Image (cartoon, rainbow, N blue to C red; front, side):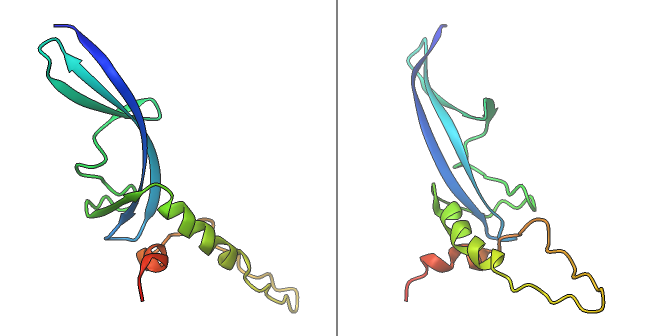
Length: 122
């Protein structure tokens, strides 16, 4: 039985873990195949690697949780872009008596409430 790639579609999704609040986005190539018997199946790839469907059981890379909200692409990056200027605009701590202020955290952990706040109505 031969197999042919009928079409390849590019899709991207935004994800938010309902357990830890971690948010991320991922782009996929979706390859629609038809086998020699006429049966269709789909193969997802991300970064050139075959991956499971992001719509079946997405897993949070931060905590391993499986309760993940799937949204259209751009939702997480939009919220992160809104929150980043507020985070970067922290007031400078005064240095007194040669004391060195503690450095800001290296990475920012996005809380679910922060990610979803712009989408709440009312």
